[in-house]
Image (cartoon, rainbow, N blue to C red):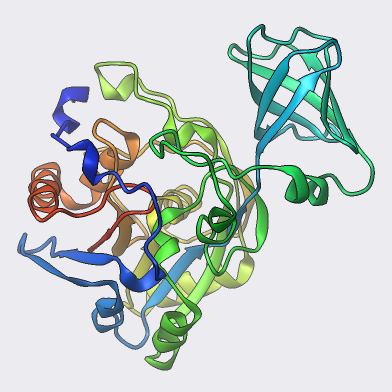
Length: 343
């Protein structure tokens, strides 16, 4: 398959730059995989598409304010974007840096009154390995001085509102540098309506990394390699999913991140395994899904791995037809945009 097979025309004005006033104010497109039928409504209609016994798996990762602004000790402004903590190395992170002259190994960075950092390795270009030193808990320091890492297609500075709205209401485990955006539509009230209907809601964690925004740079998509992202599947979630599948009940994945984690952590017998690890699963058309029966997702970038995953789940032609309809109907795209339920 070629990269151009996943292209579509998207007017720039449809790229959502701000969250709506209400989380549930977004529109919902529903795609029936069996028939190809499309219906359009409001997100609050989501409850009507569930039935008692369904299992909804959500990603409870929490976005950290991963953009740090400061200067080199020798002078000159610098911006640091946390990408991923290096295992086994205390507060050493893989980072992207932005400066008029890139900081070399040994450069000391001043990022706040109580946070400093040192470039300890060059890393794999364009990344740096940076070790941080803080007074008190590092992540608490980040929460105070960091800026929200809005996606590159949101062409404005982050605001105080983004600290709330670029975060799901069920975010618990800090570590992501991008939000699992399909979850941004949910409110405690919607979740309670689902529970009252008999829907089980269970969490897993996938810390979404910067790789979610990196373009595919090969024409043959099979040659693309995904970045690793840390995940955890709790034992209670694995048990609930396995019981539901054995009983013939449906598994709904909230977003592409939950989908990739569920599909990565399933064994050869089709049973979801509890545990933690690094997920680098690349799903594209031809992939056989073993766990997920339905998926809620936002509308994704042309030529992106996320669009390829959705195309694998629902069929490339059906998805591209749905996207053309979304463009014609003026749907809002990407992180703060509208969403699509695929049944």
